[in-house]
Each structure stands twice: as C-alpha cells, then as structure tokens.
Length: 171
Image 1: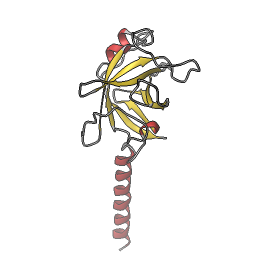
Image 2 (image 1 turned 180 degrees about the horizontal axis):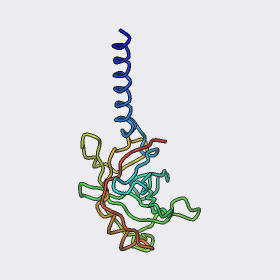
Image 3 (image 1 turned 60 degrees about the vertical axis):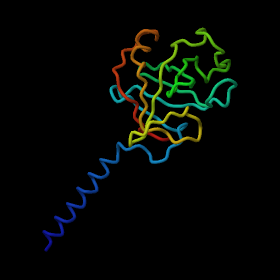
C-alpha cells in the first residue's frame, strides 16, 4: 500500500516538474509590448526591447525598438510603414539622450539605415500593425536584415547569426 502511494506521489511530482519545465520557456500570456524583453534564438545574449518615446510628429508609433548585442552598445530604431504589408525600422540615435529628436529624412540621423520588421504570435498569426504602447507583445520578432546591417553598418562590425527574437520576459 505504501509502495503504491509513493509511486503515485513520484508520478505526480514528475508530471508537475515536466509541466513546469515545459512552461518555463513559455512567454507571458498578456504582456504589454513596452514591457516585453526578447532574446535572439541563435545568440541568446543579443536582446531586443521597446522604449516608450511618446508621440512624435510624423512618426507612426510612440515606441522605439532597442537592440542590445552582447557588446554592450545599444542600437535604436523607429517604426515606419508605407503601402507595403510590412513594417520598416529606421535607425536613429539613442532615444534616451537629452538632445535626441527623430530624424526628419535623409540618412544623416540614421546610423544603421533601415531594415524590415516582422512579428507573429504563438499560432503564427502574422501581425502587420505598427507596434504601439498598449498592444500585446508578439511572441516572435524577425528582423531579416539584421545580420547584414550589423556586419556592414555597425562600427565595430558585429557578427550576428540569423535567428528569431523570442519573448522571454515581461517586466
């Protein structure tokens, strides 16, 4: 009798452990995009987050995207969209600097140029909207131009393997 009880307890313990382990990598259910933190699947020390910059004239979003490779430097991007069914990122200087203001065109204030932004949920529902405060954080973000931008435009060059940013924290 004691043996069967011990086996049931052990089975329940294993089931709970496996469930906890499986859910440990799961993103938060409802995370505001401004509180979301991501890591690059191919290079976990490369992080992505969002910073609220307030509404800026001529810009579609009140958020900036912040990329932080393991080198410690951060790179900043603003969201832009045209008639295409995807969102662009426009490089900018550090949005937390006292003298920062969005670039008004040209490449002078765009140190890394531009790149594309794609995001989707766990069921692979693609989100075409420009990210804004108050939206739910996507579970995956893909920046297909990231490797080339970091290699050819960042100084010093940063070698980034292709990967997908995965939501892993909600502050």
